Amino acid sequence: MIKTIGLGKRCADKTRDQAQQYHIDHHAPFGKRVAQPLGMLRYVGYYPQSATTMAGDAIDIPWDFIVPEYFTDEFFNNIEQWRENDPDGREITIDEARFCDRGAGVIMVCDDNEIVPDSGRDGVNIFFGARRAEGLEPRDYHEKHRTVIAPWAKRVYGEMLLDYRAYYVREAYNLEQGLMPEAPYDAMVQARFDPAVMGDMAAWMARPDVIELLHEEAKFTDTGTLVSMVCRYQPYIL
Image (cartoon, rainbow, N blue to C red; front, side, top):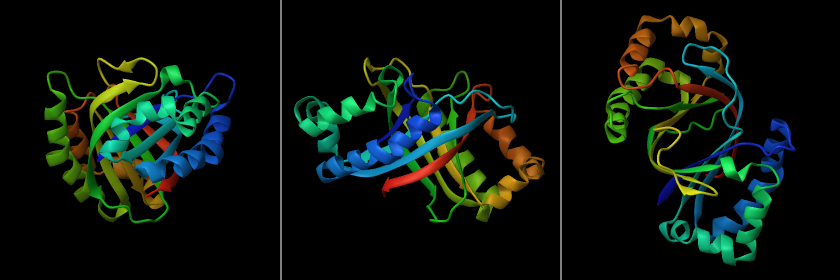
């Protein structure tokens, strides 16, 4: 199985809301219908609504779409031929340009780490984009997150975590230019929090155990570039 995350930005003639709604109403249902029988195994959409730094300062939203997708090896390895030669595949590419800037689109191939299985409960969905601290190799950063940060965060947040999954990026491709020399992020981490946490996040962030966790995370993460995005969530294939 090949696991990916797509990152996209809206096209110039649509607002963020218009582009996201087009993906929800048109592109995703079409993609599900034509790709699921061929080997698309998972397809979910996250639609960023706001973004902040690790310190909580508001910043411009870097992406309009975050789309985790899983494929069979056979389908993924032949997906470019499908896009070029199959009528549905060609239409997928044409339709992408109706709502997103393909030149800015990125597909990242990842290993995933399911830390807290999806409870199915509604909550506040947040996607974090993280880069490794200077001096670390990506694989070392991934291992630190997998063995240190992820279980620590699970322990600290406990029942407040309704879903918690990390994606460790191995390589990235621009939709038009192909293989990128470096991925936008070394890891993307998705968490769904019980709304009660988000209602008093300041109090949570002031807790000694949370402060200790963030201090430890800063040893491995470039905190100056870390971005937190609150997202609208829509599943298509689970």
